[in-house]
Image 1: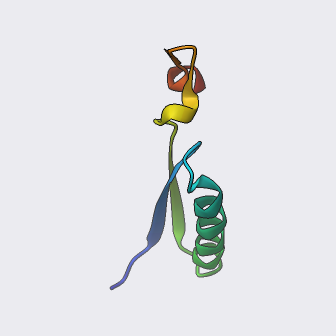
Image 2 (image 1 turned 180 degrees about the vertical axis):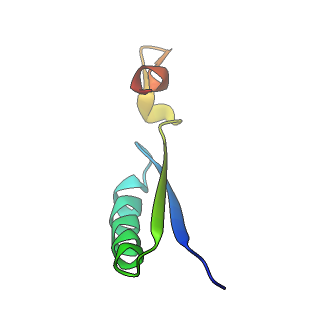
Length: 61
């Protein structure tokens, strides 16, 4: 296909984020070794970033 980059998304604080980080790290290592660019998209939009009814995701930007 001629791809020159690999990207992934991680939703920090989600139930799956620990697994996502490990899987993305492995895929990015392979892409890096192949000379490809890597792009990581990260989001904190989930209930783990709400405390006392205050949405904390904006403080992370």
